Length: 147
Image (cartoon, rainbow, N blue to C red; front, side):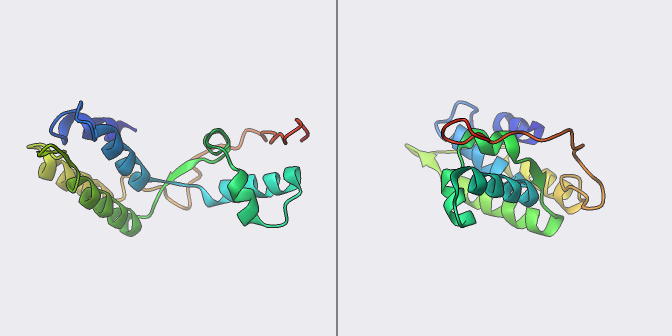
């Protein structure tokens, strides 16, 4: 989160630019991806609650609130993370509003610094080190409050 806040205030032409929120969201999606194990557990729970036969059908039932509550975010491995960040950079560079581009004067320097951290693995989760401590289960309630 700190990197995204720093990005909005230091890399963009203005933190109040009309595309600043979209740019921050693109960077956030590049830096973090949903934990696949948590997502699978949520889909299985929704399959049981709604009596669905496939994960694809359960995926259509997932709400933003459920995803936020039950699916942790994790950092990708450096190679994947670099590709995701460069894709986000390219998309953000294409944005402009009435000729005012999103990138500011510190744009290239900020990205260079970020990519150094990506290359060094500073923003990636080590697969051998648990980032989260399991504290218990959250109930997934169905349409009638049935668990």
